[in-house]
Image (cartoon, rainbow, N blue to C red; front, side, top):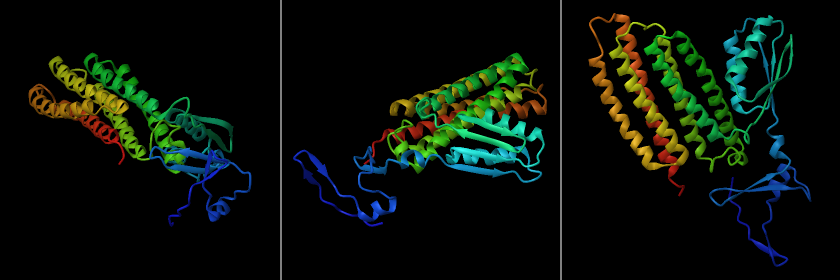
Length: 338
């Protein structure tokens, strides 16, 4: 696509005008007196979009035909793929599948995704509408809520390890679905923004380059929740650990949680100094991991307990490392574009 230079002209003494390329006008189907939307970009460029296409492009429909014998997880993954791609209407044709599959899919959609309304359901299938939610839940607010849940999971997972309360551990594991809901919602917004630059400012970002950074951040936050859920899953089967061992695991998890929380704060504020401090503290966690790994291993512990403790320490360390990844993204986003 070549670059077309056009002169700015003045009409009426106060208005500046630039003519539109004839081929572009013809390609998009503009006619005299049609309206176009002009959106100012952060780099001082202008984006021109035919007004009628601003919302028409967003209303797209996808159809998923369930093949005989398809399992629930495969069908749900397919649905999530269309959700992330930004489809407005998603229809699932279930054919002659049993009612239990339809019920399972419906529950999976409600548990894993934000802003999906089931508007029609019958024996033959499910019809859903995906709401944008930009105004009520901007991307940064969704990320903040996601991080708060993940940080709370870390605290509660280690508390369950100390108390031996399986109901707390199970609740932490269930909360991982809530984090996944926000994660999928964020990815959906970012995918739509990449395809339609007019959405970037609607979701609370300043430019297209922010989309990649926030996608990496969202994935890191989602992985933090996964590690918290893993620690909780180990807590269910390790009720007889020495109290000193439990306290040291909690100590390391608490340090990692603070790094993660500081990194999210640094990102939302674009605070380079705080981001650097969080990255430096990650090195302390690595040293703490080495020290605790040798201190907490007791001859009285079984082989299964030793393996579980090592895995929990590794998960705690990974939380800090994901926090460092978020801080690095904050540093990148804090630098203004050339």
